Length: 331
Image (cartoon, rainbow, N blue to C red; front, side, top):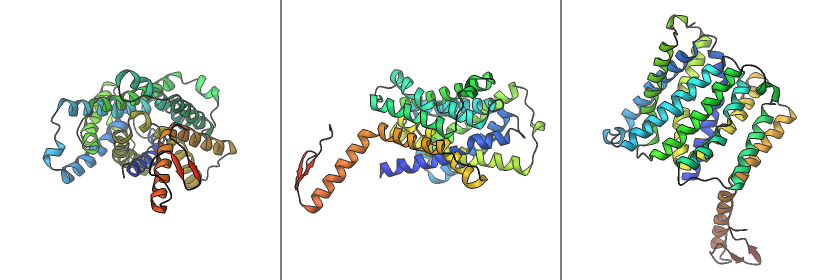
């Protein structure tokens, strides 16, 4: 059940985050960037706090330990607040495609930070190879031109890169805090922290609410980033981190460009090139390589189940079932 729950969280976070870069780019025509993010978190916080107050008894939604407070601050300040503020400001200067590929460095940075801050998360050589393959696949999906990364808009690209570092750091610090709060409860407290941080930053930057142009397109962009890529996406994302850890949880950002590309094809009539299809395959291969140990263990479990149902062999991991040799997990 935990494995299926993690898969649901992964797919939901990928789907909801997939439209974030597009909606953010569209919304920046109507909102100052930091105020846009602040309004996004205002909506997400109001929705999620209402859900938590309705669903959870008081003893489950009140933070009680230092670990609870540390987890809330790690999520609110780094994983949500600073990360999204940097993305939205950076996207004033770079395209959604370039932003998504730069932010896809997040899964690469996570194990580096985890190596220093966590004792229970390490990446094997095959896992590192899987991550690199995933990054190559993302570059193929967005049909990345190296000149786009190296030329122009240096400030915007640096801001998105800083967002990737902030997101990776936040996810690792959440894991390090080891809070006992439910991930939904922690996110409900983290969103107001992120909202306050962004409102203060917006005020300090001299942004004015009078600069907002309220149009149907503006409301649609704000509604999407507030509800879907805000409250719902963060519930799924932080639930995934609790289930599988920071390193594997952040692989969701390899799937985001796939969702964005497929969404453009289905909804906007955008074409998908042969190179994009190759990129999808490379990303899938990277996931398989990264999850090789999990996949091998799952196949062994299935083989044991078949052996028990057919009564054709031992329940051990190694040995012979009928006339068919069975593999050990070391194989």
